[in-house]
Image 1 (spheres, rainbow, N blue to C red):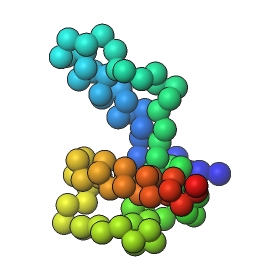
Image 2 (cartoon, rainbow, N blue to C red):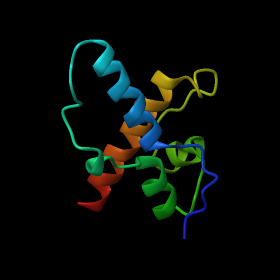
Image 3 (cartoon, one colour):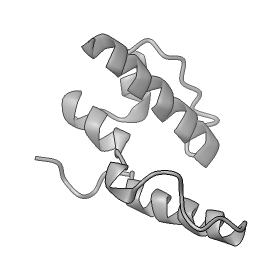
Length: 90
């Protein structure tokens, strides 16, 4: 079972994006909130709850500790290991 203390909150991110869309004149995000996938929880569960740096090391993805924890870099890294893991699963 996953603990609730991991450093990811996809629903928060979804709400944040929804607010930004509304501020810019769009009524809704182009996807339903039920389709939100918290990729960090998913990958951490499958890889026995490793940290992003360790996940990247395991999957041979370059990880820069200097850039870590910025929203853009974390999103980019999460996308990379999510896609890499989907490739592995197939």
